[in-house]
Length: 383
Image 1 (tube, rainbow, N blue to C red):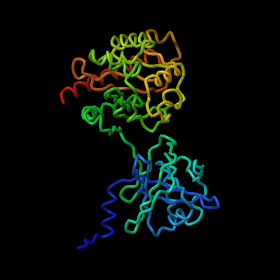
Image 2 (cartoon, rainbow, N blue to C red):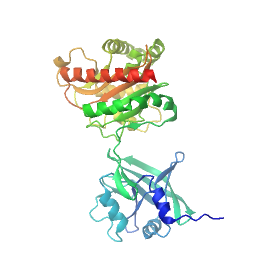
Image 3 (tube, one colour):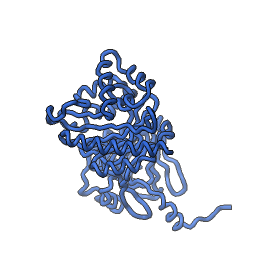
Image 4 (cartoon, helix red, strand yellow):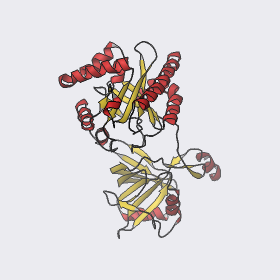
């Protein structure tokens, strides 16, 4: 027996599930831009890298894309590109009139200002009722900016403005229960201090940003959530200073002979101060030093790789006489969240803001972060 489902109700119920909005583009044989708006773009496989979208079989825009050849590009629209979405979805001719376009490495149109693009070659097309399932093999992909994406929800377009984001990796699920308890604290700090504040967790031999709220003005990263670094000097000193001897020895053991003296000095300063402060002589470019390392595509981000990047940025940690140095810019401030003697749950980390750091600014930031970390530690300890 075949169950009949009312099409209007089908759309209404499925409309409760928000989707991203993308424009699939290709170049015609004459080099003209072709495209269609889709809300069905999804990842399929990591190895090999496959993605998919699901066009209506009767769509003339899809037929034109299919006839154009084997290459296509998926453009993930930003929240401010609703007009582009409607233009491409509604026009028969001149869909891309007035829209700034570039070219992907594969030759397909890339919409300027889109959050990201995914350049593909056609892998296979499957029939699925009145739609096709189009699977593409990813050849190149890039995030273009840190804007939030355009969403389709309940029949209309909108945007995604989270108070905070939390990581979803399987290896930190247990710690996320405690991090979730302090997310309101992270959101409040980000709002008060007008920059990004994160919860940094120690997971095995890695540091993981488990949750984050706000955005540092000078950063072009969409979010730091999910970023990972090796637990090796100078990274993670806040955990070594507040943790037990096992954690300290593990951290110092990663230093190597050349970095051991500086690591021991930083450990003593972090323990005495109760926080780890990093500053630099000039604001970072957003794509230099450590940022380049984390975007480099390296299979393994080694302690030595991080150390070289940090040295290139010439970071200064916990200076004793800040005002005498003059002109230093606040990069980060980390305070441990402790739920018992030497039991570090996570660290609250303030990123920037990229302003000249006077003693007064640092003292206010440290006081606010320390108070928040203490309250968070009490909350975690009661759980």
